[in-house]
Structures are given as C-alpha cells and as structure tokens.
Image (cartoon, rainbow, N blue to C red; front, side, top):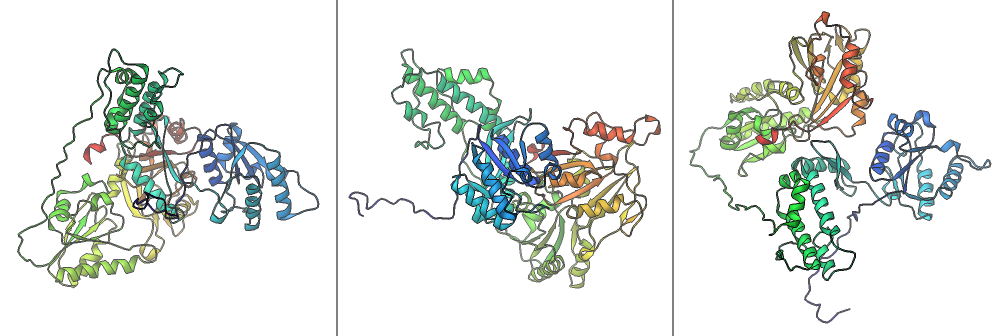
Length: 615
C-alpha cells in the first residue's frame, strides 16, 4: 500500500537473526532452576542478584548438589526441592512420572516467572531430550519462558555473557551491568568480547553511574506531584529509550522568577548534559554536596574542552634497499609498557613483516604501523608442529626477498619459546637471526600477582619448567623442596594431572623427588599484565575445584607453587624457613584464607592501581 507523502522516506530494513535484548526486574518473582550442578549455581546467583526468589528443583537429592547450591540453601538464600520426593502417579514411570510430578509442582507453585533447565549438560542425573521437551511443553502451556542448556530449540530466552561493575574502593556491586550475546554463533567469544569491553572502560565507571542516578532522583524528586508543562519532553532527556538522542539543545538559565516547571526542565537538562560530557572520573568522584551544587547552580555545567587534532606519524621512509634479515623478538608478558626499547624499535621502525605467536596480545600488535603485514601463527592443539614449520618457512622466504622479518614471541624467546629451533633452522638457510630478549612471563607474571619468586625466609631458589613436553608428551616434574618456588608454564590445561603427579605418595614417572604436601600454596595466573588478569590462589588440595568454580579459563595461564605464594599477603609471612617461628603450616594457610567466606581459595581480578599510568 502506497501512502501519500511517504514514498521518498528511507527507513531501515529489518534483518533477522538478532535477539530482543531486555532487562527484567524480578522482585518477588520466582526463578525455577532445574538441576543442582555448577551451572545451576551460576543461574541461581544471577537470579538472586536480580532480587528474584530462587527455587532449585533437582533429581538425586540434596546430597549430590554442588557445594554452592548446598551452601545457599543452608543460608536461606534459595529453596531446594528434591524432584524425587514430588508426588507422582504410581501407575507411571520414567519420563511420564517426571512430567506428571513437574506439572503438579508448577500448578501448585504460583509466581514462577522463569525456568532454567541446566541438567541437560552433564552429571549423573543428566536429563534426556524427551524429558526436556516435556518440560518445555508444560512451561509453554503456562506461558512461562524457558531456557534449556545446549538445546536452543527449547529456549524462549538465552543468557548474555554479563559483567556487573564494582566500586574499586568499597567492592560494592553497583547498578551498572553489561551483557554480550553472539546469538548462538560463539558463546565463548562472547565472554572474551565482554572482557575486552570491561577492560577498556574506566575502573570507576560504576561509581559514575551511581552518582548520575542520585542526581537523576534528586532532579525529579524536587517537583510537586502536579504534572508540569513539558514534563514528558524533559524526562526524555534522561531515558535510555527516549526520543531525544542529544542533549545539545539550549539549557535554560536559572533566574529569580523561574517557575517550578522551568526549574524542573533546567535540572533535568543539566543532568543530561553532565551524563554526556563530563569525564567519567569526575562523575565518579562527586560528593553528595557537589551533586546538590550542580542541581542548584546559577549556570549550567560546562564540558571540558576537547582538542580534536590528530597527529598521524608518517609511514614513509627513505631507506635504501637492504639485505633481508630475521629478528627473533620477545614481546614480554603482554603489557605494552614492558616492551624493551629494542623490541619497540623492531616493531615500529624496522619490520616489513611480523610473524607473531597467537598469544601476543592486541595491545602489542596495535603498535605495529598499518603499512606492515602481520601474520598470526595457527598454533592450536594438534597443529603446533605444522604451524611452527609454516612460520619458519615464511620468515626465510620473506628474508630472501630483502625484507626485515620480525618473528614475535610472547615473553622471552629462549624461555620455552622454541628460539633454539628457529636459530638453527634460519642458520641452515643462510640467515643468522638476531635474538632480542624480552621480559619473561616466568618472572613478570608472579610479580604482577604480588608473588616474589624468591624471598628471604621463604624461597631461596626458583625453578621454571613446562607442563607439557614436545608433541604433547608428559614431562617429569621436580619433587618438593620447601625453600623453592616452582613455576610451571603451559600446564593449566592439564591441571588435574599436574596436581596428581605432585601429591602422589609414591614417586612416579611424572615426578622426581619428594611428594608435595596437599596444603602447599599454589596460584594460577591468567592473562598476566593485561587488564583482565586473574589470579586464583589456593592449596594443592583445593586448586582444581577453585579453577572450576571461576568458569571459563583465560589463556595464557601459568602455575606458581610454593610458600612464596602467600609470603607478601597482608602483613606478610616471611618466616617459613625459620624453625623457631612457632607457626605451623596449617596455621599459615588458615590465616591466609581466613577472611574469604570459608572458601579454600582467593580470586583477584585486574591489575594493581597505578598500571593504567603506563598504558
């Protein structure tokens, strides 16, 4: 149908495949979580944070529920219902009995708003496809949205990869949340994208949101209950889905004769401008008095001046043609400020081609001029040897064409970086490579985590080894030495096997020397020196469970084992080697983990304050 006057209007055409992203408020509503494993605990926690009441309905009884589910039930945070104890028909069995019991429970439990089926993934009580289909059918008949794990056709909604921001000083979890979805095209990638977004936002952004919320409440709350002229239009300035997309319209000045309607519109307008233009850091630091002053000011707040000048360094040079060469370069642990001057020069001034290992972070690769070709190694499990050969061949071929090739490796090239293999290969093909050292992650990562690899009274030496040998073979790990710190690279993916080898009572082919006491401190450091760095510290006894509790892993990761892990915690513990100290190892570990809500591990996210100054 052609409507007169609209023929020339160009509206966007919808393209299917997206999700309608909504934010639900669940106060006093019930979220029903089916299953009692770690995923059920994750869903329950998310619902609790949304102020929902949570009921966990699971087969197998309370005894097989994961620790977190049992703890939250004991604390009264959730209600646990044993599916096997639900009344069902004595004439039915299997799926039919489950269906009858579930439908009866649903009919007798008003207020259920969402159902999350989590026991279709794994476990001794894993739900069948037929049973999940029946749950979906029953919930649909009751108009209750359902999410069924690993069965997208049995889902009315999906979960985004979310992050809720905390105040960096108080640790208070604020109102700001972000969520990322790939609409089923890459759930793990969604988690990585979420971390990338979070790492690029200011740490104080949560506090800024809280202060703007306070200003918004004060600006709106000062008016009377009487509707004011232009009120709806003014409030559009503050609404995320308001029709007004820019706060650049003139702001009314305050005057002695201003009416209540004019004062209301002025305050709303000022809050909108502040939200748009003030630096996040300034918003986060505002005190209650400053908030009041802004709303009562004589003139609108000003935005900071912005210098829009962009200086683009020239990528042209007058270098004469030269003989090709190969540089074996270490990029350090990841933080671009830890690049050596030699590495920085190689990347920004000398390179014609960069052949990079896959773990070198974007922050380092971003320093390379756009005129330089960058290739990333395809070193994945099962393809490491082939990818290594491919990169060496590419380096020789480019050098023969007169190019300067930078073979870029994480950390230091000679610390498990295969530098020796490449030196011999390039030499056999007529090129003597120049090896440029880098800061080794074996030393830098523990430092970023607050762990000294050596410390008087704690660790007199340290040893670096790998958790996986050539072509994936198992390696022999060193035995326990109380005065030594053990650093294991490339071992996180095989953590259970590594721990089993270390704590085995008898020596095996995987350990040479004494067994490690299960109480020995251990730390896993992931993405060392990067904004999304994570440190998981525990004991050998609990570290596997600790790693499983944090969800997705963040490669690259490394393992630190020994008493140095707790040496600098709090007031310090530097008398481990002093027999006269009178403190037992059990007491040391208990004190170290005492204020952590009874958990046998600690988790620390992000870098210490101050590193942002070096970005």
